[in-house]
Each structure stands twice: as structure tokens, then as C-alpha cells.
Amino acid sequence: MTEASTPPEWLGDAVIYQIYPQSYADSNGDGIGDLRGIAARLDYLVRLGVDTIWINPCFVSEFKDAGYDIEDYFTIAPRYGTNTDLAALIVRARSHGIRVMLDLVPGHTSHLHPWFLASADDPGDDRYIWSDSEQPPGDKWVASPGRRPGYYLPNFYAIQPALNFGYAQMDPAEPWREPVDAPGPRANRAALREIMAHWFDLGIAGFRVDMAYSLVKGDPDRSATAELWREMREWIDREYPDRVLLSEWGDPKQSVVAGIHSDFFLHFAGRALRSLWDNGQGSHSSDWVEVGSCYFAPEGGGSMRDFLAAWAEADEAIGKAGFVALPTANHDFSRLTCGTRTRDMVAPAFAFQLTWPSLPVIYYGDEIGMRYVPGLPDKEGSQLGTQARQGSRTPMQWDDTPGAGFSTAPADQFYLPIDQDPDRPSVAEQENDEDSLLNQVRRLIALRRQIPALGTGGTVEVLSDGYPFAYVRGGTHLVVVNPRAKAASLDVAGLAEARLLAGHGGVAIGTHAIDVEPFSYGVFELAEPR
Image (cartoon, rainbow, N blue to C red; front, side, top):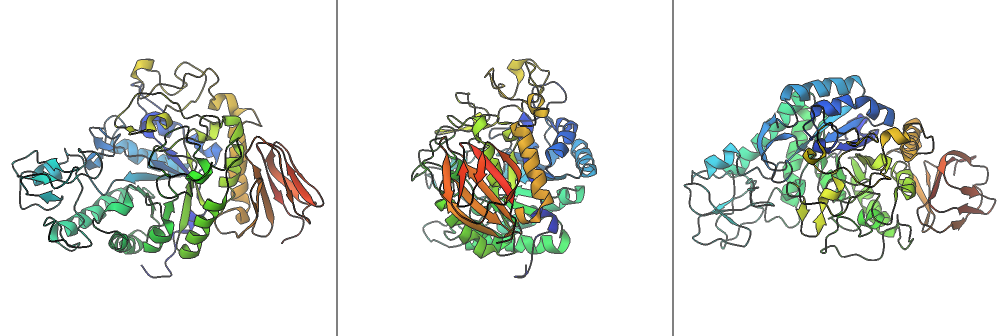
């Protein structure tokens, strides 16, 4: 990849929608969402305004980690349908103006994958990381299940053996370490290209890459891992120049420069995302060191400074090489509607996300205010210490029927229980309410598409990083958000003639000040460019 390499033009205009497939739409009444169910809801996605969907892992798996334990990278898991169903979804989605991205898990396989089963019987196979010691070299190491003696290194759960992409540094005390150009790591890089090429050829637009930062071991500055992805980007630019990679890395200033097209600010990597959304009332790790409250909370004790500092650092490093991705939530983190932050409070968060120069990623159901549901049992490895990730994975709420329009199966067969709150929101309830969260999100997405200054390419000038948060995009459009339960004001002159384009609550622009009611936002066109 040359320094001047830029991502495909379509990515800069994208609004991405993450679908957790087992919880989105069930077409065959077995209680688990599937690909045909997604296809049946494409008209809804068109009306919402998204143009790219990312589907969590849907390949053959025993689902000990909800599909992030893959047994076959080339075959769709039967519970989701068939390869033919995916091909049909891709074609139908493109006819609706929607691209399909899949989830790639490059760093490990299932312990049932044929590659691993062969490696566990063959001491000469170095596709995985093995130690032939008589005792496990550390707490994480797992005894070989095959004829091969010794132990293997898993990436996450014990059933997820790490693929060997080599070590950045050798250590005589750890003789299992191999360099990145050893035969095993080279074979795994070739296999990674083969997997991507297979699905690119079927028509997918790209991959969200799981744990992209973790492939090369013993790589404290991740430079060797960055070099691996730089090699992959050069191949993609040459063979599939309109395809993209969206990474789970959490450090865009490094990953995007290395060749990833877009990287998330993530809940487990620094304060940038948590300082926005994490109120500590959902899926929260005791390991996260917090400094103060999050900004988007009714209590109003947060600050935008952590986010803005991380954004400025990433934006300067990235230049035109790619984008920072900003999610509302994801399958591992709490939803926007969580605890004391109820769904009537989250519209300002969407106003910010959809007018900031990052790549917006909407987690399914957030657009109607589906809540993080506490107290659910573990499902397919979702409970990770204190992180109860299942609370963000409940079935999509399409209507007000007992099954919420998700499935016709008996409730006890649902992948996870439907939210039992009698006041739970639904698409049907909000569809015809012009002031509903759903329709506000639709208008904000439409506004982003209509006005280039609100997208990834427009400049941003921050007027206030407190309450309210106010900024000017492209020198032509003002955005003001107040997500707290207390009114806020900002002393600023020269904006009184601005024209409201979209808003909720009350934002009053006077000659010398802006006054904002609780839980309010406004997007304005300035009378004169700044």
C-alpha cells in the first residue's frame, strides 16, 4: 500500500448497520434469526437509510462463543441457512442499494476445525502455537486433545486455539516462538487471503475483522501485526480495490495507517468511546479504569474532552487514509438505552453520531431505543466475568405481538428472551409517529446524505466541549446537543439567523447565546459561513 492509498469512495458515505443474526429476524419459526429473515427486512433498512450491513459470524460453529469459534470458514451455519441463502441476500441487498459485510475471525478457530484436529495429531504442524513441554507454560495453555504431546495456546476461551501468525520477538525461554516468516505463519496468511477472496468473489463488500490487533504475538507495539495488515491491504488494493476492512483494533491512528480502511473507537480500548456512552449500568468490566461520568447521561457529569483528544490524535494520523468508526453499541457492549438513560434521552446521541466526521455504525435496535436488558442467563459464552453481554443481544422488536415479530416459535425456544418490559418499543409503534426515535434517526441519516458537510469529509470546529456540546461542520452547519436532564446554555454571538433543519426538544439561538432544553438537539444551517 502506498502512502497515498485511499479507501473506496463509497465507504466515506456509508452508514453501517450491525446485525446480530441470531437475534434479528427468524424466517422459519425455530426461534433463531437467519439470513432469509434479514432478507425479508431489507425494505425496513432502506427506509431507515443505511446502505451497508455488517453481519456477525454466520459460519459453521459449535457456538461456544456465539459463532466466534469457527469450524469452517467457507460454509454458512445451518441455523442461519445455506451458502445459497447468503448469495441471494447479497444480490437482493444490492438491488436495494445495500452492501453486505461479514465478520472475519482470523486469529483463532474452533477446537473442532479440521486444521486444528490435524495439528493436534501432527507434531510437525505449526499452524497453531504449541509447546511440547511436560507442564503447561502458563495458566492459559490447554492440554493437547490429540496424539501430539504438549499444550496449545488459545486466544480467548479454551475452545479457541490461536492460529500461528508468528512472534515479533524471539525468546530462548519460550522455544515455541516462531518468526512471522516461518512456514506456519506463511500458510496462515495464505489461508486468510483465500478466505477473504472466496467471499469477495461471492459479492460481499468487506469484513469486520475480529481482534485484528492480536495476530502476531510478542508484539507489544503491534508493529509486526500492522505490517501483516499492510501486506493484506496491498493485496486487496490490487485484487479487490472496492472491498474494505473494518477492524476491531481500537487504535485508528495505528491500524488505519497500517492499511485497515476503518477502525472503531472501542469500549475496551481507552476512554474515547466509554467517555461518551458507558454509564456503568450495563455490560461493564471491573478492569476499566474510569475518570468521571460519561457525557451522554441524564446526570450531566461528563465531558467531551477525552473523546475529542482521541479524535484529534487519530484524525491527524489518518489523514485521507481511512476513517474512525463510531458505534452506538455492539454485541459486546451496552446499548445506548441502558439503566437511567432511557430511550427518550438518547436522540441527542444519534444527533452527535450522525453529524460527526466519523463513520457511523448503528447497532440493530438502537434506532428504536431497545434497552440493555439486565439479569439474563449466559448464552453461548456471553457472560464474560462481570460483562453480561447477553443484555445487548436480545431479539429485535418489530411489533407488539408476544414474539415481537421476531419469531413465531414458542417463547422458550427464542435464542434469548424478548424484553419483558411492557413499555418496550417496537418498529410498528414508532413507524407512524413523526417524533419517534426511529423517525428522528431516519431524518438525521437523510440529512447526513443530503449535506456533504455533515459527513466524513467536512471540517469540524468545536465551539463548546461542555453542556451543551456545540460544533460547526464544514463552516456551514451548526450542531448543538444537550443530553443531560438540566438545561444548558452557551454564550456565542453571530448565529441568530441560523435555520433549523432537524431537532428535538428545544434549542433557541439568540443574539448572544444558545439556550438548550434537557435531552435536546438541533442541526442548523448557518446564514453565513464561518
